[in-house]
Image 1 (cartoon, helix red, strand yellow):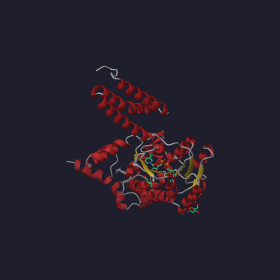
Image 2 (cartoon, protein in one colour):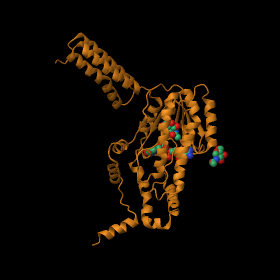
Image 3 (cartoon, helix red, strand yellow):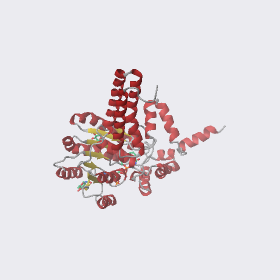
Amino acid sequence: MDALPSSPLGWVCTGVTVLFGVTMLCMAKRSLAEKVNLLLWSLLPPLLGLLCVDMLGAAGGLGVFCTLSLVSCVYLGGRALLPVGDKAVLITGSDTGIGHALAKYLDKLGFVVFAGVLDKDGPGAEELRRTCSRRLSLLQMDITNTTQVKEAYLQVSEKVQNTGLWGVVNNAGILGFPADGELLPMSTYRRCMEVNFFGAVEVSKTFLPLLRKSRGRLVNVSSMAGGIPLPRYAAYGASKAALSMFSGVMRQELSKWGIKVAAIHPSGFRTGIQGTSELWDKQEKELVENLPADTRQDYGEDYLLGLKTCLLHMPTYCAADLSPVLSAILHALLAKRPHGLYTPGKGAYLTLCIFCYFPLWFYDFFMSKMLSTDSVPRALRTSEAESKKP
Ligand SMILES: NC(=O)c1ccc[n+]([C@@H]2O[C@H](COP(=O)([O-])OP(=O)(O)OC[C@H]3O[C@@H](n4cnc5c(N)ncnc54)[C@H](OP(=O)(O)O)[C@@H]3O)[C@@H](O)[C@H]2O)c1
Ligand SMILES: *[C@@H]1O[C@H](CO)[C@@H](O)[C@H](O)[C@H]1NC(C)=O
Ligand SMILES: *[C@@H]1O[C@H](CO)[C@@H](O)[C@H](O)[C@H]1NC(C)=O
Protein backbone atom coordinates (compact mmCIF):
# COMPACT_ATOMS: atom_id res chain seq x y z
CA MET A 1 0.00 0.00 0.00
CA ASP A 2 1.46 3.39 -0.85
CA ALA A 3 1.74 6.18 1.70
CA LEU A 4 -0.48 8.59 -0.19
CA PRO A 5 -4.25 8.17 -0.66
CA SER A 6 -4.94 6.63 -4.04
CA SER A 7 -8.46 7.98 -4.68
CA PRO A 8 -9.87 11.54 -4.83
CA LEU A 9 -12.07 10.58 -1.86
CA GLY A 10 -8.91 9.76 0.09
CA TRP A 11 -7.55 13.23 -0.66
CA VAL A 12 -10.77 14.89 0.49
CA CYS A 13 -10.67 12.93 3.74
CA THR A 14 -7.01 13.83 4.29
CA GLY A 15 -7.80 17.49 3.73
CA VAL A 16 -10.69 17.43 6.23
CA THR A 17 -8.55 15.61 8.79
CA VAL A 18 -5.64 18.03 8.54
CA LEU A 19 -7.97 21.04 8.73
CA PHE A 20 -9.63 19.54 11.81
CA GLY A 21 -6.29 18.85 13.49
CA VAL A 22 -4.95 22.35 12.84
CA THR A 23 -8.15 23.96 14.14
CA MET A 24 -8.01 21.91 17.34
CA LEU A 25 -4.36 22.79 17.81
CA CYS A 26 -5.03 26.51 17.42
CA MET A 27 -7.85 26.31 19.96
CA ALA A 28 -5.65 24.67 22.59
CA LYS A 29 -3.94 27.42 24.52
CA ARG A 30 -2.40 25.06 27.02
CA SER A 31 0.78 23.19 27.69
CA LEU A 32 2.68 21.12 25.15
CA ALA A 33 1.42 17.89 26.71
CA GLU A 34 -2.15 19.12 26.34
CA LYS A 35 -1.52 19.98 22.68
CA VAL A 36 -0.01 16.58 21.94
CA ASN A 37 -2.91 14.83 23.65
CA LEU A 38 -5.40 16.93 21.73
CA LEU A 39 -3.62 16.34 18.44
CA LEU A 40 -3.56 12.60 19.00
CA TRP A 41 -7.25 12.51 19.77
CA SER A 42 -8.24 14.73 16.87
CA LEU A 43 -6.03 13.10 14.25
CA LEU A 44 -5.73 9.44 15.13
CA PRO A 45 -9.35 8.33 14.62
CA PRO A 46 -9.80 10.06 11.25
CA LEU A 47 -6.36 8.83 10.10
CA LEU A 48 -7.35 5.28 10.97
CA GLY A 49 -10.52 5.85 8.97
CA LEU A 50 -8.42 7.13 6.10
CA LEU A 51 -6.39 3.94 6.08
CA CYS A 52 -9.65 2.05 5.83
CA VAL A 53 -10.71 4.14 2.82
CA ASP A 54 -7.59 2.88 1.11
CA MET A 55 -8.12 -0.70 2.17
CA LEU A 56 -11.89 -1.18 2.13
CA GLY A 57 -12.68 1.02 -0.82
CA ALA A 58 -14.81 4.13 -0.88
CA ALA A 59 -18.13 3.12 0.74
CA GLY A 60 -16.83 1.02 3.68
CA GLY A 61 -13.91 3.36 4.26
CA LEU A 62 -16.08 6.45 4.27
CA GLY A 63 -18.33 4.82 6.90
CA VAL A 64 -15.38 4.04 9.17
CA PHE A 65 -13.92 7.52 8.58
CA CYS A 66 -17.17 9.25 9.57
CA THR A 67 -17.76 7.05 12.62
CA LEU A 68 -14.25 7.53 14.00
CA SER A 69 -14.31 11.27 13.33
CA LEU A 70 -17.62 11.48 15.17
CA VAL A 71 -16.14 9.62 18.16
CA SER A 72 -13.23 12.03 18.37
CA CYS A 73 -15.55 15.05 17.98
CA VAL A 74 -17.73 13.82 20.84
CA TYR A 75 -14.67 13.21 23.03
CA LEU A 76 -13.20 16.62 22.24
CA GLY A 77 -16.59 18.32 22.62
CA GLY A 78 -16.79 16.92 26.16
CA ARG A 79 -13.41 18.45 26.90
CA ALA A 80 -14.43 21.86 25.65
CA LEU A 81 -14.77 24.48 28.37
CA LEU A 82 -17.66 26.90 28.69
CA PRO A 83 -16.74 30.60 28.65
CA VAL A 84 -16.04 32.21 32.03
CA GLY A 85 -18.19 35.26 31.21
CA ASP A 86 -19.59 36.70 34.42
CA LYS A 87 -20.00 33.36 36.21
CA ALA A 88 -20.06 33.62 39.99
CA VAL A 89 -18.56 30.93 42.22
CA LEU A 90 -18.66 30.46 45.99
CA ILE A 91 -15.67 28.79 47.67
CA THR A 92 -15.64 27.77 51.33
CA GLY A 93 -12.46 27.69 53.44
CA SER A 94 -10.50 30.27 51.43
CA ASP A 95 -8.24 31.26 54.34
CA THR A 96 -5.42 28.91 53.34
CA GLY A 97 -4.45 26.03 51.08
CA ILE A 98 -6.50 24.85 48.11
CA GLY A 99 -9.44 27.22 48.76
CA HIS A 100 -7.12 30.22 49.01
CA ALA A 101 -5.22 29.32 45.83
CA LEU A 102 -8.51 28.59 44.04
CA ALA A 103 -9.96 32.00 44.96
CA LYS A 104 -6.93 33.74 43.45
CA TYR A 105 -6.89 31.48 40.38
CA LEU A 106 -10.59 31.93 39.55
CA ASP A 107 -10.36 35.66 40.21
CA LYS A 108 -7.51 35.92 37.72
CA LEU A 109 -9.57 33.99 35.13
CA GLY A 110 -12.35 36.57 35.44
CA PHE A 111 -14.88 34.76 37.64
CA VAL A 112 -16.93 36.68 40.19
CA VAL A 113 -15.56 35.00 43.32
CA PHE A 114 -17.28 34.75 46.69
CA ALA A 115 -14.54 33.64 49.05
CA GLY A 116 -15.95 32.21 52.28
CA VAL A 117 -13.42 32.51 55.11
CA LEU A 118 -13.35 31.22 58.66
CA ASP A 119 -11.83 34.49 59.83
CA LYS A 120 -12.59 37.66 57.89
CA ASP A 121 -9.87 39.53 59.78
CA GLY A 122 -7.27 36.79 59.45
CA PRO A 123 -4.11 36.88 57.31
CA GLY A 124 -5.64 34.73 54.53
CA ALA A 125 -8.59 37.09 54.07
CA GLU A 126 -6.26 40.08 54.25
CA GLU A 127 -4.10 38.63 51.49
CA LEU A 128 -7.12 38.05 49.21
CA ARG A 129 -8.31 41.59 49.84
CA ARG A 130 -4.88 42.90 48.90
CA THR A 131 -4.11 40.80 45.81
CA CYS A 132 -7.44 40.12 44.12
CA SER A 133 -9.67 42.21 41.88
CA ARG A 134 -12.71 44.20 43.00
CA ARG A 135 -14.91 41.37 41.71
CA LEU A 136 -13.92 39.19 44.67
CA SER A 137 -16.09 39.47 47.81
CA LEU A 138 -15.05 38.07 51.16
CA LEU A 139 -17.71 36.36 53.25
CA GLN A 140 -17.39 35.59 56.95
CA MET A 141 -18.46 31.97 56.83
CA ASP A 142 -17.76 29.36 59.49
CA ILE A 143 -19.60 26.53 57.77
CA THR A 144 -20.58 25.01 61.12
CA ASN A 145 -22.39 28.21 62.11
CA THR A 146 -25.93 28.32 60.69
CA THR A 147 -26.24 32.06 61.25
CA GLN A 148 -23.11 32.79 59.25
CA VAL A 149 -24.13 30.47 56.40
CA LYS A 150 -27.55 32.20 56.22
CA GLU A 151 -25.96 35.65 56.25
CA ALA A 152 -23.56 34.63 53.49
CA TYR A 153 -26.52 33.37 51.45
CA LEU A 154 -28.29 36.71 51.77
CA GLN A 155 -25.20 38.61 50.67
CA VAL A 156 -24.58 36.32 47.70
CA SER A 157 -28.18 36.23 46.52
CA GLU A 158 -28.38 40.00 46.66
CA LYS A 159 -25.25 40.38 44.53
CA VAL A 160 -26.11 37.77 41.89
CA GLN A 161 -29.77 38.67 41.41
CA ASN A 162 -29.52 38.93 37.63
CA THR A 163 -26.84 36.43 36.76
CA GLY A 164 -27.33 33.70 39.36
CA LEU A 165 -24.67 31.69 41.14
CA TRP A 166 -22.86 29.30 38.79
CA GLY A 167 -20.89 27.16 41.21
CA VAL A 168 -20.39 26.15 44.83
CA VAL A 169 -17.07 24.60 45.83
CA ASN A 170 -17.32 22.83 49.18
CA ASN A 171 -13.66 23.02 50.09
CA ALA A 172 -13.46 23.82 53.80
CA GLY A 173 -12.30 20.83 55.77
CA ILE A 174 -10.23 19.71 58.71
CA LEU A 175 -7.94 16.74 59.13
CA GLY A 176 -7.96 16.16 62.85
CA PHE A 177 -5.06 14.40 64.53
CA PRO A 178 -4.23 11.21 62.62
CA ALA A 179 -4.00 8.31 65.07
CA ASP A 180 -5.33 4.78 65.55
CA GLY A 181 -9.14 4.88 65.67
CA GLU A 182 -9.11 3.37 69.16
CA LEU A 183 -7.04 6.28 70.45
CA LEU A 184 -8.86 9.19 68.82
CA PRO A 185 -11.04 11.14 71.25
CA MET A 186 -14.77 11.33 70.48
CA SER A 187 -14.33 15.08 70.09
CA THR A 188 -12.18 14.48 66.98
CA TYR A 189 -14.84 12.26 65.41
CA ARG A 190 -17.53 14.84 66.19
CA ARG A 191 -15.49 17.80 64.96
CA CYS A 192 -14.61 16.08 61.66
CA MET A 193 -18.28 15.24 61.03
CA GLU A 194 -19.29 18.74 62.04
CA VAL A 195 -17.01 20.51 59.56
CA ASN A 196 -16.40 18.00 56.75
CA PHE A 197 -19.91 16.59 56.55
CA PHE A 198 -22.63 18.68 58.25
CA GLY A 199 -20.93 21.94 57.29
CA ALA A 200 -20.75 20.97 53.61
CA VAL A 201 -24.33 19.65 53.64
CA GLU A 202 -25.63 22.88 55.14
CA VAL A 203 -23.76 25.01 52.61
CA SER A 204 -25.03 22.87 49.73
CA LYS A 205 -28.64 22.92 50.95
CA THR A 206 -28.56 26.66 51.51
CA PHE A 207 -27.15 27.54 48.10
CA LEU A 208 -28.95 24.95 45.95
CA PRO A 209 -31.89 27.27 45.14
CA LEU A 210 -29.39 29.62 43.44
CA LEU A 211 -27.69 26.74 41.62
CA ARG A 212 -31.01 25.40 40.38
CA LYS A 213 -31.68 28.78 38.79
CA SER A 214 -28.37 28.81 36.94
CA ARG A 215 -28.31 25.04 36.28
CA GLY A 216 -24.76 25.25 37.55
CA ARG A 217 -22.17 23.13 39.30
CA LEU A 218 -21.65 21.69 42.74
CA VAL A 219 -18.07 20.66 43.47
CA ASN A 220 -17.02 18.84 46.63
CA VAL A 221 -13.48 18.63 47.75
CA SER A 222 -13.51 15.28 49.49
CA SER A 223 -10.56 12.97 49.93
CA MET A 224 -9.14 9.65 48.89
CA ALA A 225 -9.40 8.73 52.58
CA GLY A 226 -13.18 8.96 52.18
CA GLY A 227 -13.27 6.34 49.44
CA ILE A 228 -10.79 3.78 50.66
CA PRO A 229 -9.68 2.85 54.18
CA LEU A 230 -6.38 4.42 55.25
CA PRO A 231 -4.84 3.66 58.66
CA ARG A 232 -4.98 6.52 61.22
CA TYR A 233 -7.71 8.36 59.31
CA ALA A 234 -10.77 6.80 60.94
CA ALA A 235 -12.38 10.11 61.93
CA TYR A 236 -11.37 12.13 58.88
CA GLY A 237 -12.03 9.25 56.45
CA ALA A 238 -15.47 8.50 57.87
CA SER A 239 -16.52 12.16 57.59
CA LYS A 240 -15.25 12.36 54.01
CA ALA A 241 -16.97 9.04 53.16
CA ALA A 242 -20.23 10.55 54.37
CA LEU A 243 -19.61 13.60 52.19
CA SER A 244 -18.75 11.45 49.16
CA MET A 245 -21.93 9.40 49.52
CA PHE A 246 -23.97 12.56 49.94
CA SER A 247 -22.34 13.89 46.79
CA GLY A 248 -23.10 10.73 44.85
CA VAL A 249 -26.77 10.83 45.77
CA MET A 250 -26.93 14.54 45.00
CA ARG A 251 -25.39 13.89 41.58
CA GLN A 252 -28.26 11.52 40.80
CA GLU A 253 -30.98 13.73 42.23
CA LEU A 254 -29.79 17.05 40.87
CA SER A 255 -29.32 15.96 37.27
CA LYS A 256 -33.02 16.54 36.67
CA TRP A 257 -32.43 20.20 37.59
CA GLY A 258 -29.53 20.42 35.15
CA ILE A 259 -27.01 20.72 38.01
CA LYS A 260 -23.80 18.75 37.55
CA VAL A 261 -22.05 17.47 40.64
CA ALA A 262 -18.37 16.58 40.83
CA ALA A 263 -16.15 15.29 43.60
CA ILE A 264 -12.43 16.05 43.85
CA HIS A 265 -10.18 13.68 45.80
CA PRO A 266 -6.82 15.46 46.04
CA SER A 267 -3.91 13.70 47.63
CA GLY A 268 -0.55 14.83 48.89
CA PHE A 269 -0.63 18.60 48.50
CA ARG A 270 1.19 20.87 50.91
CA THR A 271 -1.35 23.22 52.49
CA GLY A 272 -2.51 24.44 55.86
CA ILE A 273 -4.08 21.04 56.50
CA GLN A 274 -0.78 19.60 57.73
CA GLY A 275 -1.11 21.97 60.69
CA THR A 276 1.59 23.37 62.91
CA SER A 277 3.61 21.73 65.62
CA GLU A 278 1.84 23.80 68.31
CA LEU A 279 -1.51 22.53 67.05
CA TRP A 280 -0.32 18.91 67.06
CA ASP A 281 1.12 19.32 70.56
CA LYS A 282 -2.28 20.47 71.75
CA GLN A 283 -4.14 17.65 70.01
CA GLU A 284 -1.66 15.04 71.18
CA LYS A 285 -2.13 16.22 74.75
CA GLU A 286 -5.91 15.98 74.38
CA LEU A 287 -5.60 12.48 72.95
CA VAL A 288 -3.30 11.19 75.68
CA GLU A 289 -5.35 12.76 78.48
CA ASN A 290 -8.53 11.07 77.29
CA LEU A 291 -7.07 7.57 77.19
CA PRO A 292 -7.96 4.96 79.80
CA ALA A 293 -4.88 4.00 81.81
CA ASP A 294 -4.61 0.44 80.50
CA THR A 295 -4.91 1.52 76.84
CA ARG A 296 -2.20 4.05 77.46
CA GLN A 297 -0.12 1.31 79.04
CA ASP A 298 -0.67 -1.11 76.13
CA TYR A 299 0.24 1.37 73.41
CA GLY A 300 3.09 2.83 75.42
CA GLU A 301 4.35 6.38 75.76
CA ASP A 302 6.81 6.30 72.87
CA TYR A 303 4.20 4.92 70.41
CA LEU A 304 1.82 7.72 71.40
CA LEU A 305 4.48 10.39 71.10
CA GLY A 306 5.58 8.88 67.77
CA LEU A 307 2.17 9.51 66.15
CA LYS A 308 3.16 13.11 65.64
CA THR A 309 6.33 12.33 63.73
CA CYS A 310 4.40 11.20 60.65
CA LEU A 311 2.69 14.60 60.65
CA LEU A 312 5.97 16.39 60.93
CA HIS A 313 7.34 14.41 57.97
CA MET A 314 4.21 14.91 55.85
CA PRO A 315 5.20 18.25 54.23
CA THR A 316 8.40 16.71 52.82
CA TYR A 317 6.53 14.30 50.56
CA CYS A 318 3.64 16.61 49.77
CA ALA A 319 3.63 18.66 46.55
CA ALA A 320 3.86 22.43 46.91
CA ASP A 321 2.41 23.02 43.44
CA LEU A 322 -1.38 23.05 43.72
CA SER A 323 -2.03 23.52 39.99
CA PRO A 324 -3.27 19.93 39.35
CA VAL A 325 -6.06 20.46 41.91
CA LEU A 326 -6.87 23.90 40.52
CA SER A 327 -7.19 22.61 36.94
CA ALA A 328 -9.34 19.71 38.13
CA ILE A 329 -11.72 22.11 39.89
CA LEU A 330 -11.77 24.42 36.86
CA HIS A 331 -12.68 21.48 34.65
CA ALA A 332 -15.44 20.48 37.06
CA LEU A 333 -16.79 24.04 36.93
CA LEU A 334 -16.55 24.72 33.21
CA ALA A 335 -16.37 21.53 31.15
CA LYS A 336 -19.48 20.81 29.13
CA ARG A 337 -19.33 17.29 30.52
CA PRO A 338 -17.44 17.30 33.81
CA HIS A 339 -16.29 14.00 35.32
CA GLY A 340 -17.96 12.68 38.47
CA LEU A 341 -14.61 12.16 40.17
CA TYR A 342 -11.18 13.79 39.85
CA THR A 343 -8.10 12.39 41.59
CA PRO A 344 -5.27 14.96 41.33
CA GLY A 345 -2.04 14.14 43.14
CA LYS A 346 0.54 11.42 42.93
CA GLY A 347 -0.27 7.88 43.98
CA ALA A 348 -3.99 8.56 44.38
CA TYR A 349 -5.04 6.72 41.26
CA LEU A 350 -2.87 3.64 41.81
CA THR A 351 -4.09 3.12 45.35
CA LEU A 352 -7.68 3.55 44.21
CA CYS A 353 -7.15 0.96 41.44
CA ILE A 354 -5.70 -1.56 43.86
CA PHE A 355 -8.65 -1.03 46.17
CA CYS A 356 -11.18 -1.39 43.36
CA TYR A 357 -9.74 -4.26 41.34
CA PHE A 358 -7.92 -6.48 43.83
CA PRO A 359 -9.18 -8.60 46.72
CA LEU A 360 -9.48 -6.77 50.02
CA TRP A 361 -6.77 -8.86 51.69
CA PHE A 362 -4.30 -7.77 49.00
CA TYR A 363 -5.22 -4.11 49.44
CA ASP A 364 -4.70 -4.38 53.21
CA PHE A 365 -1.36 -6.07 52.66
CA PHE A 366 -0.33 -3.41 50.14
CA MET A 367 -1.24 -0.58 52.51
CA SER A 368 0.55 -2.17 55.44
CA LYS A 369 3.72 -2.37 53.31
CA MET A 370 3.25 1.15 51.93
CA LEU A 371 2.70 2.77 55.29
CA SER A 372 4.84 0.54 57.45
CA THR A 373 6.43 2.43 60.31
CA ASP A 374 8.91 1.32 62.89
CA SER A 375 6.58 2.08 65.75
CA VAL A 376 4.86 -0.86 67.40
CA PRO A 377 2.65 -0.60 70.51
CA ARG A 378 4.46 -1.58 73.68
CA ALA A 379 2.26 -4.58 74.48
CA LEU A 380 2.98 -6.12 71.07
CA ARG A 381 6.66 -5.37 71.26
CA THR A 382 7.19 -7.29 74.47
CA SER A 383 5.17 -10.32 73.37
CA GLU A 384 7.14 -10.38 70.10
CA ALA A 385 10.39 -10.19 71.99
CA GLU A 386 9.20 -12.93 74.35
CA SER A 387 8.19 -15.22 71.50
CA LYS A 388 11.69 -14.86 70.07
CA LYS A 389 13.19 -16.19 73.30
CA PRO A 390 14.00 -19.88 73.12
N1 LIG B 1 -3.94 18.85 50.97
C1 LIG B 1 -4.24 17.64 50.53
O1 LIG B 1 -3.40 16.93 50.03
C2 LIG B 1 -5.64 17.14 50.65
C3 LIG B 1 -5.85 15.78 50.50
C4 LIG B 1 -7.15 15.29 50.57
C5 LIG B 1 -8.21 16.16 50.77
N2 LIG B 1 -7.98 17.49 50.94
C6 LIG B 1 -9.14 18.33 51.18
O2 LIG B 1 -9.01 19.56 50.53
C7 LIG B 1 -9.75 20.54 51.24
C8 LIG B 1 -8.89 21.77 51.41
O3 LIG B 1 -7.83 21.43 52.26
P1 LIG B 1 -6.42 22.11 52.23
O4 LIG B 1 -5.45 21.03 51.99
O5 LIG B 1 -6.42 23.27 51.36
O6 LIG B 1 -6.27 22.49 53.77
P2 LIG B 1 -6.33 23.87 54.52
O7 LIG B 1 -5.21 24.72 54.05
O8 LIG B 1 -6.38 23.56 55.98
O9 LIG B 1 -7.69 24.48 54.05
C9 LIG B 1 -8.91 24.25 54.67
C10 LIG B 1 -9.55 25.57 54.96
O10 LIG B 1 -10.83 25.37 55.56
C11 LIG B 1 -10.93 26.28 56.64
N3 LIG B 1 -11.89 25.82 57.63
C12 LIG B 1 -11.68 24.94 58.64
N4 LIG B 1 -12.80 24.81 59.37
C13 LIG B 1 -13.71 25.63 58.81
C14 LIG B 1 -15.06 25.95 59.12
N5 LIG B 1 -15.68 25.42 60.16
N6 LIG B 1 -15.69 26.85 58.33
C15 LIG B 1 -15.06 27.41 57.29
N7 LIG B 1 -13.80 27.15 56.96
C16 LIG B 1 -13.14 26.27 57.70
C17 LIG B 1 -9.55 26.39 57.17
O11 LIG B 1 -9.40 27.55 57.93
P3 LIG B 1 -8.20 27.66 59.01
O12 LIG B 1 -6.93 27.53 58.24
O13 LIG B 1 -8.39 28.97 59.62
O14 LIG B 1 -8.42 26.50 59.93
C18 LIG B 1 -8.72 26.41 55.90
O15 LIG B 1 -8.60 27.67 55.38
C19 LIG B 1 -10.19 19.92 52.54
O16 LIG B 1 -11.55 19.57 52.42
C20 LIG B 1 -9.33 18.68 52.62
O17 LIG B 1 -9.95 17.67 53.33
C21 LIG B 1 -6.70 17.99 50.89
C1 LIG C 1 -22.24 32.24 64.84
O1 LIG C 1 -22.06 33.44 64.15
C2 LIG C 1 -22.70 34.54 64.76
C3 LIG C 1 -22.60 35.71 63.83
O2 LIG C 1 -21.29 35.91 63.38
C4 LIG C 1 -22.05 34.79 66.13
O3 LIG C 1 -22.66 35.89 66.76
C5 LIG C 1 -22.22 33.53 66.97
O4 LIG C 1 -21.55 33.68 68.19
C6 LIG C 1 -21.67 32.32 66.23
N1 LIG C 1 -22.05 31.13 66.96
C7 LIG C 1 -21.16 30.22 67.31
C8 LIG C 1 -21.69 29.04 68.00
O5 LIG C 1 -19.99 30.34 67.07
C1 LIG D 1 -20.86 17.60 47.95
O1 LIG D 1 -20.81 17.17 46.68
C2 LIG D 1 -21.99 16.71 46.21
C3 LIG D 1 -21.66 16.35 44.84
O2 LIG D 1 -20.34 15.98 44.70
C4 LIG D 1 -23.06 17.72 46.32
O3 LIG D 1 -24.26 17.27 45.80
C5 LIG D 1 -23.23 18.05 47.72
O4 LIG D 1 -24.25 18.97 47.89
C6 LIG D 1 -21.95 18.58 48.21
N1 LIG D 1 -22.01 18.81 49.57
C7 LIG D 1 -22.02 17.83 50.42
C8 LIG D 1 -22.18 18.20 51.82
O5 LIG D 1 -21.92 16.69 50.06
